[in-house]
Amino acid sequence: MLTICSIASGSNGNCYYIGNSREAILVDAGISARQTINRMKQQNLDPALVKAIFISHEHADHVCGARVLAKKLMVPVYATRRTFSAMYNNHKPLAPRFFEPGTEITVGSISIYPFLKNHDAAQPCSFRVSYNGIHTGVLTDIGVACERVISELARCHVLFLESNYDEKMLWEGRYPWHLKQRIASDHGHLSNDQAFDLVSRHSGKQLQMVFLSHLSAENNTPEKAMNRFSELRERYQIYLTSRYAPGEVVSITATAAAAANAAVLPPTQLKLEL
Ligand SMILES: [Zn+2]
Ligand SMILES: [Zn+2]
Image (cartoon, rainbow, N blue to C red; front, side):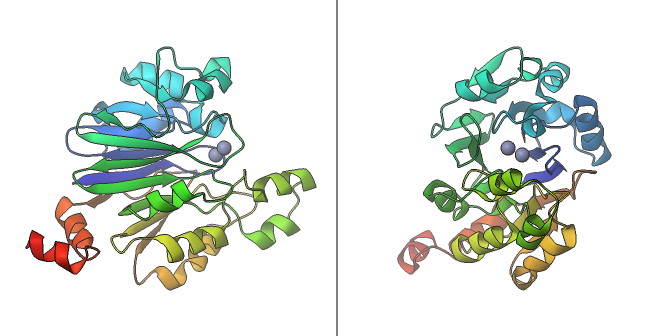
């Protein structure tokens, strides 16, 4: 069984928990260490299960708590060399471990596959986190979905998917023009429309849950993001995430994942498996 929870999600702090009964990993550590641990405890998630922290890119909303959190939990922080170099010195973990995009890393029974994405950072990565045939994608901070994002998304049972801004709110809002352009550019963030389009066009039949993530406080509302996905709510469980509090703790079993996988196998393969 894989247990999944958004500890924090939004433009001012991101941290995602993915684990089983023996171990867990965090993707990003963009709120304080104290807050991260408190929020895990609040949701009955044992911080002692966390065995590693993975950093997607150097922006403060993804890394500002990493150094202290790693020290408190006594776990390694994984980042690419270029991401590590681009971090502010006071965010840099003391003993980083480096990964290469495209090379899988294992932490106990969990495997983590990092891959490059389009975002205005040194070497930004998304992750597919897998355990026992269950795949979770952590897909935030993406200007435009590249082939890698699309093909990994298509394999996932669970998605943390960026739904950053509502087009109308962004363009009519009070942000300066250059910032609006940056957010909407190919190296900025995904809008509600882009996120909806990605799921409706590219998800696999095994997809079960979507956590709408990294919502902008200024250019989006939880209602607008959720409403955009209303027509997919019969097919998938759609959850909101929040910057202010941890989200629901959700579990998915290998049996459920396998049943969903079977639905997408070609008939010949299905016969062999039976
Ligand atoms: Zn971010
Ligand atoms: Zn970013």
